[in-house]
Length: 225
Image 1 (tube, rainbow, N blue to C red):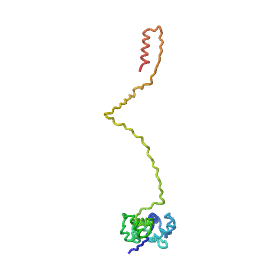
Image 2: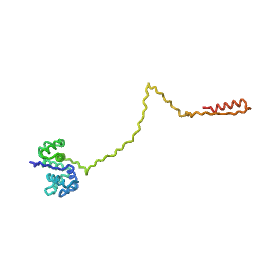
Image 3: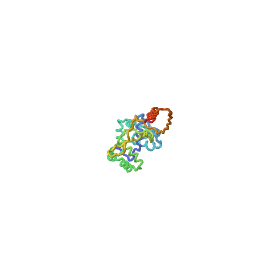
Image 4: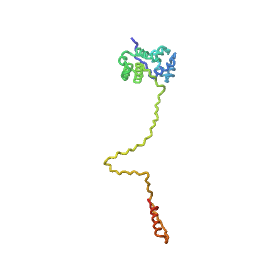
């Protein structure tokens, strides 16, 4: 019969996966609270109080902090990681829990309630413990996000506002609005009206033909449109 316990690993999932990523680089011979504080970017006190006891419970380190090399290799190897997760489930979590919540589709709130009722812990700790249980149950290989995620707002470039296109309404048969006549480009525009006073001095000895010619030329050149 597998060994079971009413105390369970209390490791934030992001720290567990960060440790897995660190092991991909190198496996330490000994894991101390100072080592965990450095690689996981957390306080040494928190590492000593929560992470170290959990790693001992899993079997990744012994009572002196010496690393179990076989389990460490399974932790960092993508192909062997599901095997490690299954061994943790059998060793740490009771059959009752695994039967009630066997897969990733299990109700997370109900899992947290189960840990609160069976371990006598508060809501915050139960949330971390149940999240770790789900991560081990799923054997998720998703790498964690490094560092503190800062929320940034991307500047949104607003497109230039387009001028509305005015479309002429279709003319109906009942539309009685006057039509604007088309202006011929060759048609000369009329300028302002001018009043011209012309004084003509005709010699007294001018013949009637000369006088007639003067007025005809005036009509021809001066009053021409």
